[in-house]
Length: 321
Image 1 (cartoon, helix red, strand yellow):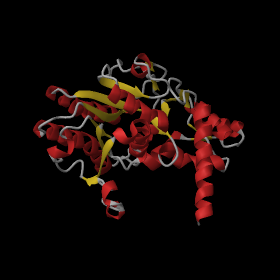
Image 2 (cartoon, one colour):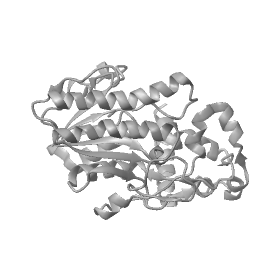
Image 3 (cartoon, one colour):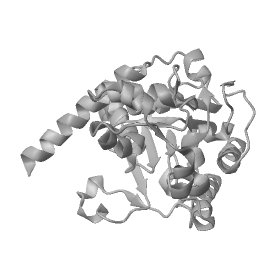
Image 4 (cartoon, one colour):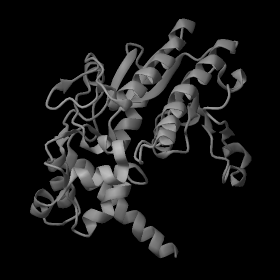
């Protein structure tokens, strides 16, 4: 199976590649595409990624022609202060990159069979306690607008006979990046705290499940359009902080009592604070209805596994230094 992974050196991309190798073994031919030149020349020739600035130009059609699947995970981080320039980069790194990719499909002698294009639960906006599935309408706000434009560009590939899956990622939890990389040290110090009142819903997913759900989308021809990549058991921010404190062996009552004021987040991130203050009770209806079985359906099990890996990696680094 020939798979092209755009953003394959990122947090989620590395996990997707690992899942592909574990599942497909010698049957897999993987091509990694990255915009980061740094370090690429140091890799062995057979491991070097194809370097492409995702928002600047159309990739060569030969890159994707004949591929069984293209996985597009490109996108600027949304966890930053949303200045006008930052918002432009967030939008362009998703919308223009996907537009350029689909344009490449148009010129390919043999377009790929399926495109799994990243999107996000930001599509739904801030929705309180409302249960959200792939059939729910979009919300309001910058992230929702970006996700809608992002998915519209991806769905244009369907005009070429390509099956398109818009993978709406929730908060991906795993070692080596994402939210856990930022907050784990704080919780280890016993200073973990909920955000505001802590009643906002967090649509989370373990990194390993996220990767396997991408593979599930590739293999299952029933899946077209939107697919939520989230656990079937979303939690509130208060539940998340208590469970993470428990996983790292710190008193859970402190995590439940301490609170980060939302105004403090707005001072630091501006409008970008919406990423951690909005409430989204998102459910994986498509994944469940097409037979996906979660490895980590419950948050406590997921966080304990992540913390175990985190500690193991710290010991490995300490032994190597």
